[in-house]
Structure formats: C-alpha cells, structure tokens
Length: 140
Image (cartoon, rainbow, N blue to C red; front, side, top):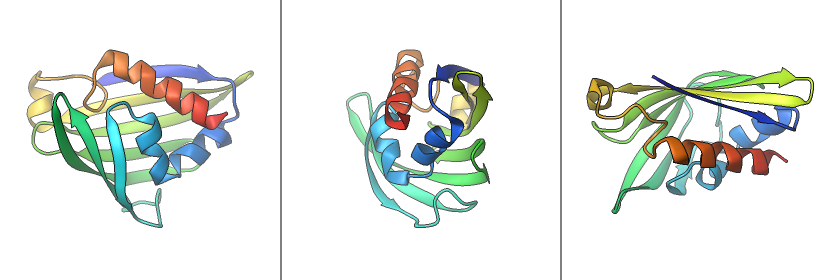
C-alpha cells in the first residue's frame, strides 16, 4: 500500500469536477497518454474508461473502473493494466480552512503486491508528486 497526500488551495468541489471528467485523467495522471473511450456515466459505480499509457519504453492499454463513488469526497477506482500492474486506488478529498487536501491510497494487486512495486499506479514516487501537481492545476 502506498499513500500520497497534497493540500490544494481550491474547494473540494473543484477537485471533484476534475475527477468526474474521465477525459481529464490523461491530463493529470503521469504516464497517461490518452483516454480512448469512456462511459458517459463516469464516475458512477461500474462506469469505466479505457486508456493508453507509457510503461518504460512500452505503450500499453488499460481500463479504469469505478468501484465506489461518494461525490464530492471519495472515489475508489480499479486500475487494470494486466497481471503486473493491477491496483485499487482510493482518492479522497477533505475540506481544510484554506481549500482541501487530496489523499490517494493505492493497493497493488496480483504480482505487484508481491513486492515488485508499491508505487501509485505505474510510475513511482516522483510521478505521484507530478500527478497531484497536475490535478491541482486542473482544479484551479
């Protein structure tokens, strides 16, 4: 399990507005290339989007599926990228006096949970910081 957190100077609803736009994930997730197809119901439970991403020198495909959604404060997403990069990520948004705090908790599954990686999605700690910075910019 890996946890990443960042304070944002915007209201929680501004962050939720980005999270409820499936197309925006390609803009803020480090390593994401593009969203190929998304359900109009995103981010309701069961909705998904297909995406392409970089993993080292390779280009791969994956699917993100909503397991839980509690607007505007929490979404649980299963990120399926094959047997080596499957995870469940909880994205929680909490109010603060100056805006909000976003916490991402990722639980690797399958081969990844055996110690091969404990990083957020596929990219590692520096990419996690970039992802949260990008999310903050989109929410402003």
